[in-house]
Length: 266
Image 1 (cartoon, rainbow, N blue to C red):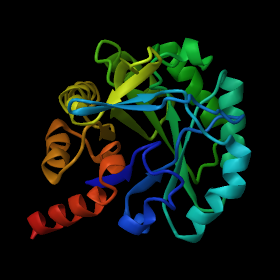
Image 2 (image 1 turned 45 degrees about the horizontal axis):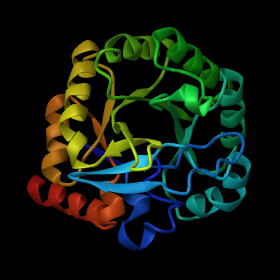
Image 3 (image 1 turned 180 degrees about the vertical axis):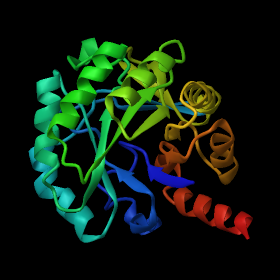
């Protein structure tokens, strides 16, 4: 079972490096990159019982600054890096991919179609089969064959089967399924709930997609804190797992899960 650092939960990589062997993980997924920088909101995070509420404004430095300030360090450390990307249109998504795909050391792209409210953020809406397929085609048209494409779809099981099939048929290499749920910060700002509270919904989402596409690679994400959680995703059909908000509470959790899995495999 491959372990990944989920998008937005590993900082630039430098913050997490003292606590985990990043070169040894299945992949380090960057925060989601847009063509231009996004500042985010002043209030970004609030604690919730069994979870964490985060504003989903995609705060990031923009793809060009990422390439000059963050990607060189990741490549120098030998970190298998996956660039999470999105955009307002399919043309903008393609522009982001075209820029980042030239970066030395990049392992692949994670196309983020799991944003809960793309209209509010003025992003391409990949929540329909047609919209998701169009975004994947836009990426594949400019993506070098040496790089793989993962597509993040979220947890909405009402849409997942048809959207997942559309994305798989267009030519994605794997699906990332699960993750945060729609929520709100105490001041009313639209946000997402992540953490242990979303584990059951993520497991159901993974099981739904794996039933629809039994041979297609699926990576589960949502609420992972232990080796038992990783095994639960494996039982649901996932071939990989992303560790997300648990890293914000305990940056050593990735190393602990890896040690637990190694101990149990002996």
